[in-house]
Length: 433
Image (cartoon, rainbow, N blue to C red; front, side, top):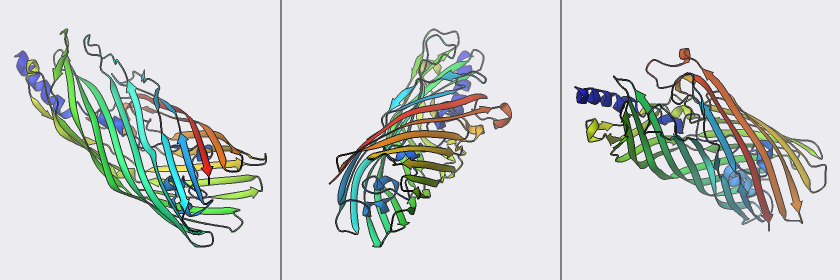
């Protein structure tokens, strides 16, 4: 009888144990301010005014602007903390404040006065939300609930000035995805069963990404406009699964046997439009609007199995695909730059981000299903005639309260308060040949 009850319980696990896995992606795959010691200071409102090597990421049309050649090195140490209900509705846990190292290494060369080419590698997305030693009330099993995702791109592109101040550019992108996911769920049936599932070493590389952009501005550089289109890149990441389970009243956790797993999703199309305006000789204003088509991700497609311990029936359980219900992301970015002090630039920025994950799909391991606010302050210093050192500090936050009325019947979302806050130090150095 006990064995039959366990088998019934395990059947429920097949349908629900991985309902927490959208945590890895719920809220989009990218920050509104990714990296850049220079442009982070104006909230990355760069599509209309970027020039040189960093154009490979912000707008490849800018590869045709600026000096003969330049290199740009950027490093943005990021410290994020997430909070939300993990074990039960109404409870709240804080994740560890984890470090992630977004970076960019880029170079640009002017082949002619009109043609510039560039190459580089940079981080374009990711998250690291990790709740360690989560206590579900089981003595032998204190799982780690986590979503650890990194997206790195290799890119090469060219920009061409077809008319004075009118530039077009295109860049090819190779997108590399790596992730590790962990979830845990208690299913009541008599005594209850805590089951954990981990998916390790997920990775995928796609070579079919592009960016296409254009810029136009005044001859005296007193104003400018830009537009950039990033194409969608779908991916299927391959990895392996493992897991453990413990029954209430037992004193040991029993290991499950994993296998090969694939997880499919998309890094979506994005369109950015923005510009700048010189108020006077030493004050410049920036603005930008970004639209990202995240509603293409309505389900996280999962293909794989977990085999429970023989003491729990030894059943082979298929891992189901997970509804995501994402919404498109809208970013509004504003910034200003003051250059009244010789060889110095002082910057400030703000970005508004619309929620991507609806409250009905909230997860503790990603950004809260709420409006996000990002604030930045930065400065840059010209060293000699060809070196620039730039830096910026960033604070981002989002918070929301999810009630029982927000949750769809049968969904794994827990009611409670969801929060996320991020501190970033953006640094960059560039050299012009």
